[in-house]
Amino acid sequence: MKRIALRPFAEEDLSVLDRFAAEPEVLGEFQWSGFADPKVRRRRFAEDGFVGDESTALAVTVDGVVAGMASWEAADRGGPAGGCFEVGVTLLPDFRGHGVGTKAHRLLAAHLFRFTRAHRLEAFTDSENAAEQRVLEKVGFHREGLMCQVTWRDGRYRDEVVYALLRGEA
Image (tube, rainbow, N blue to C red; front, side):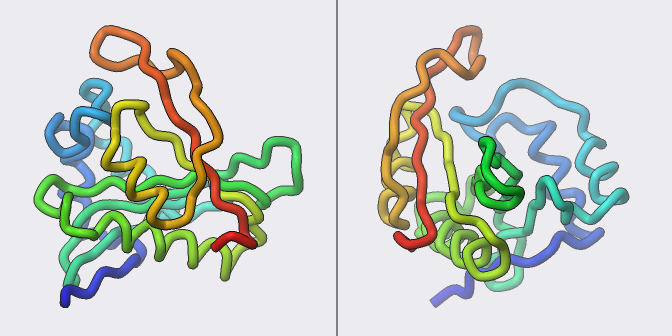
């Protein structure tokens, strides 16, 4: 059985992070929105190592190898600071479809409910991304609704589905 874990990014991981800005297949059809500054993640790493009050990103590892990233950012929606986070997991292509994303989502939710005051976790995904919707539902997130034409990708606006997980549901 492979060991899936979350850990802070290290300097030696930066070449993997660069791929998210430069290789469309790394983010995949539902997340790629065009080429971006390949150095933006390096600047963020130099600033705070991707661990901050407003947002954080951790490496998802499989047997110690970086397989992707798990992230969260504050989305307090008028409630107390730290009460709501938008979460996401992005995996490199070789690690998709093997249960890594499900485990990473579970680890992320457990981490946030244990070490923060989060009451609500939110996840947004393309309405056509059935695989991600299945993962979120396996982890316990419930579908809350559809946001019509909210994301621009591939030359048109796309619908997004919003999911949530509350502290008492985890």
